[in-house]
Structures are given as structure tokens and as C-alpha cells.
Image 1 (cartoon, rainbow, N blue to C red):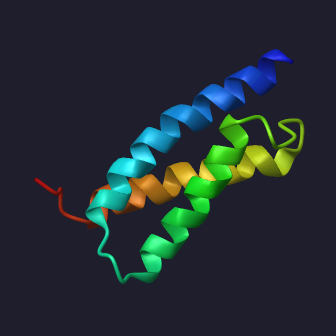
Image 2: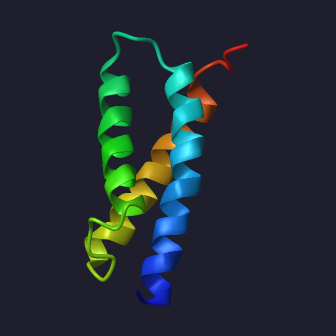
Length: 80
């Protein structure tokens, strides 16, 4: 396994934790939650090594997942 693949898997695992916290902020019947679930599935596959990390689209998707989390963190209230 290449260093790039290992780095992408580690980034996906850390981003998954952040995404889980974001999902807690989103209401249950929201289209936003559907997007979160899609990102969660992608990050799970990436973290498990089921995706080709050499594909440039993978890095783009990781960036989109990161931007999604930033948006949710700024737009939704923290759940206590």
C-alpha cells in the first residue's frame, strides 16, 4: 500500500468522526441528512480500502466531504 493510500485512508477515518458529529446536528427528515449519509458511505469505503486512492476524483470527493462538514458546522446549532 502506498503512502498516498495510507494518508487518504487516515484522512477518511478522521473526517468520518467529524461527519458523525455533523449528522447529529442535522434534522432527521432533511435532504441534507441524505447528503451526509452519501458522504458517510463514501468515507467508509475509502477508509476500508475499497476505493482506488490514485483516482484524482477521490481527493475531490474528500474535499467535498470536508466542505460539507464545514457548512453543517456553520449553519446548524450544536446538539447538547
